Length: 215
Ligand code: NHR
Ligand code: GAR
Image (cartoon, rainbow, N blue to C red):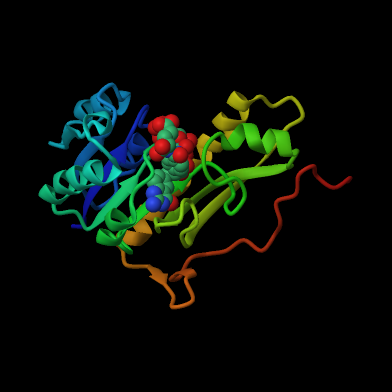
């Protein structure tokens, strides 16, 4: 079974969705840069011997030192894949290169729109009618790696940042376990052109339209 290390910084609901998805994988460890991350307790409560660890970024002089310590902790668990699930520290090129093709992230926007932080607020300000989330391979460029799967949701007239975030999060919990399953099954192929193919994935050819057409 493929070994997975999950990196978190906070709540850990995406982590929890993966732990509960009955995937044929071994969750070797959950590692947080924040000592107070709620997700650490959730992982411990899940049982199944998942190790938890904290690598507190504030204890390190710079990003390179933090990333070296983080890599050392990750490597103790010998993962096949490293999964960022609400992980909030930008990672150095050296760190990313170490896990090239083996590290994925979920980002709360339809990339390449709204990379970086505060995506829901920025989507509301931009007035987009469709928003969503993206699972992608992690590359040195922030939120710009090859896309594996996306889900779209409508932006509603009375949305707040919180209501929109909640609608997107529900989709995150669907697509991230699916992406991890495909990865571990070897069905995610990264082409020379930098785009991803999912072998034997079904596709919907109908559109998601928001606001809807008049009927
Ligand atoms: N690192 C690299 N090199 N490439 C990516 O694609 C990465 C990454 C690290 C994290 C997740 C990402 C997201 O999905 C991610 C993708 C943190 C920040 C950020 O600015 C931006 C994007 C993401 C994660 N972090 C601040 C920093 O100084 C700290 C912000 C905070 O603590 O609240 O590192 O959105
Ligand atoms: C999720 O919406 C995730 O996409 C986002 O933070 C939330 C974490 O929730 N990630 C980022 O913004 C990364 N910068 P969770 O801890 O409950 O999974």
